[in-house]
Image 1 (cartoon, one colour):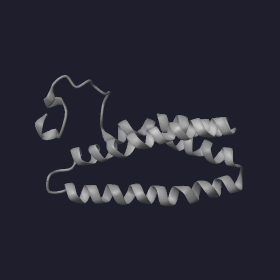
Image 2 (cartoon, rainbow, N blue to C red):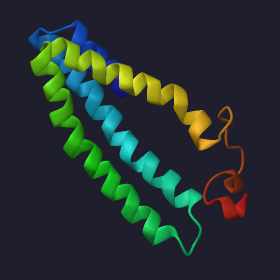
Image 3 (cartoon, helix red, strand yellow):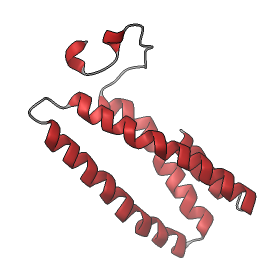
Image 4 (cartoon, one colour):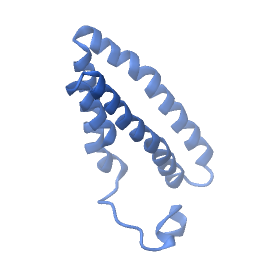
Length: 123
């Protein structure tokens, strides 16, 4: 949500103050995103598959950053800079809406005991 908000801010508020605030919001989002997704991958992989899952996750995370920038740059070149950020925000919002369905998870629940936290094998 924070990443989508930061990207939308970059689209809507293209003055120096807006860029700094949006960059801070995106930085916070990214600082939480990688560890959370990494934990999800480790939690969902079996013991024998864990190293492959971690490697695949790292590979595709890097590919997304390596390919995403030039693709959105092409969108920005074809239109304008604001549209590039708007497209990024739209893609992030769509991913946010699709994630529960793709991951097969229901609404979040609050952990109440130590057994509610950690690998699925303890649940």
